[in-house]
Image (cartoon, rainbow, N blue to C red; front, top):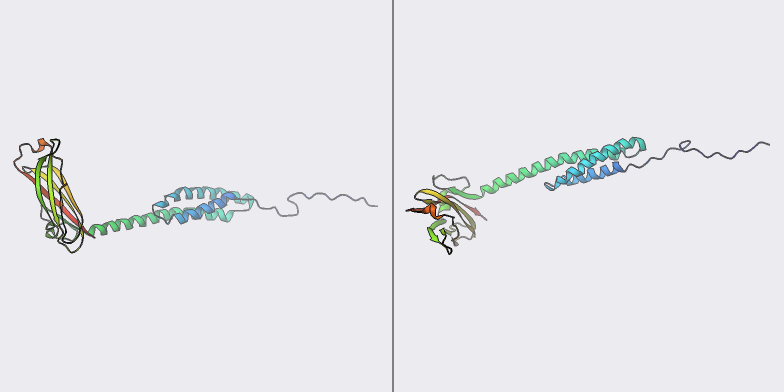
Length: 231
């Protein structure tokens, strides 16, 4: 009678395929790369692409290295590396397009200004002739007054009258002269005047000390540049 031997337990790795392990780093790289690509299309805010893409590249490289051992995650690691690199490229491309568009829009906005430079009689680019802007405002007062605290200050009044056929805002720059010598600058504005509307700016003052105008026989308020913007 033959002797029966109990069956021997099967050793792992013999007779059946080894189950692949996990590769979470490769999956993480894939997720980070996809998010980075999506965010890269949002100008300015896409600055967050950098940490996402850098982590995606690091995790993708580690996950790809690990894929050879665990036989899993090779595709995710490669995709994570590629999407992270694409996100960085898109960051530069989208921001370049955005800032180029902003620069173009700024230049177009500048063209909408009606401007003129006075003093030398030459018209500045902007579309309006010198007379079209200058006829809409006039400096009606240029004098030194004594304030409540006994401080000498300029009283400059600028009268505006919109003679155009649309709403305009005005901006006037000038300088104060004492006997022909410049002692200070002044600015004046009038906002959103309707056609035919008038406005007097009584706060276009300039800080002038008593020493600067002491003994001056003549004070002048000279316009240097005037512009108007339509709505």
